[in-house]
Length: 631
Image 1: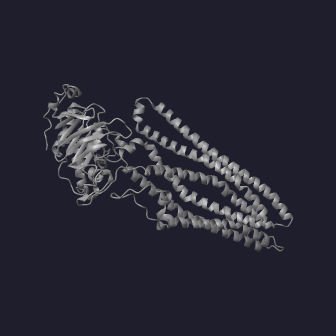
Image 2: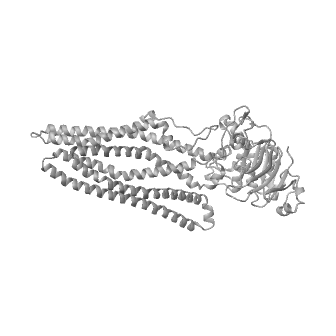
Image 3: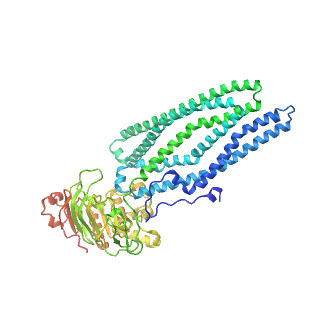
């Protein structure tokens, strides 16, 4: 085990389910578990710095008393050289120890912050992710964290050691010659003025650079995900032009940053060079007049030579500080967002669940650890909903009941709110008025893990992961509590019910890697795998957002028939546009103008002019009766 591994501090875990969400932390609070080690590393660095800045004083003593004596001998010269070598080695060893102490500490803080950020993002409601570009969130979890780590491991300690080196160096300069010390000190105010202008300019450029980096990451992600659309529409050149423009903006900002840093370095170097030239003239005169020894003058220039990098490096340290500060501000910007989802696990017994989100003291709910044996009832009571920032409500005073075990089809014109209604049930969005109940419990009172453990969702645009078919199907299954044989049976059943027989024709069957987002599969195959993933969890409530749109009518009928036969303890709500899908449902709800306009069996609603117009009255409509009621 290495030194780093043996000294590694425990990493704070992300918030556990059932914990209260803490306020957004500052960098100092994140460093709490490893502050002692950071201070130890800082102390080691300070010791090494003091040794380094003191070497010129030892050099002055060697020049004046050993080499500069009346009878210098090779032994004295070697002794002086050996002393300087020992001090240099000691300084190098201490710097190495400091790096071993601090690098691991900084990496721990970086990992903790990244874990907390990911945990926060997973708690945020869908409305938050609707507002934030994914590229901005990506850069906040990657490059911003790296900037903070570099400041902790190098910038912060280097700033402390540089400040100490300048103070100790000034003490030595004044002790050797108050006049030379005064000359050097007079160069500091203009240097600080240059740095002040540098800070003002660099802070603005740093913020702009990080914002543009996030925008660029968003563009790359969108272009990669939409590459088929861009190619099909012949928009590759236009996309490249947009990307080039954004890249050029970032390039110009980075060039401005480099120019600002470079001009600051030039100005501080000119001030340092002028100071050295004046000091040389004055120092030679003092040595000639006997007011200063050769060793003292040697020590002065050796000390200023050591101080010069610290002064010139201050611009870079300020730049690193601004980078980390902006990164920390961006981190806190996310962490300060109200999550809207307080994740609370209910123990294995019925427990009151307090929470301000509910608008009530709380309610008793079934423990999430117990298996559900019955289909659930869903009831909307005078529900209102509008998207954040939108003055137009999606629906108002909507009431609808879905009986346990029923297959309900939601139909309506595009944009009437069918998909939104589905997303309200697992609380991906929250009602703005009225109530939504599952088995008589308001979803606002139900802890999210308990609520969502009863629900599975399959969307029209299936999201598959870059792994095997088997892993994709088992995403929502608790693998820890099941054997491999049980998991294989779950996969087999889910694929059979979703009519995913094509899997057996894949090169490696269920172990075939399907590529990023399942793009190696057809649209219908992706939809069936998404449905299989939802079925595998054996939910009490199955929400299908037009997931059969890419299937032919025969396959669609087979899938719905299998759902009726094998998921008789599941309540199914499905949004649909095709008449063939609607005809297979037990009951149909027609949505219009933000309300439920009519409900009934397919044949009953055919007398409704709006419903008939929506169904187009073509000859392909399957007559009612093909899908039996399964209560």
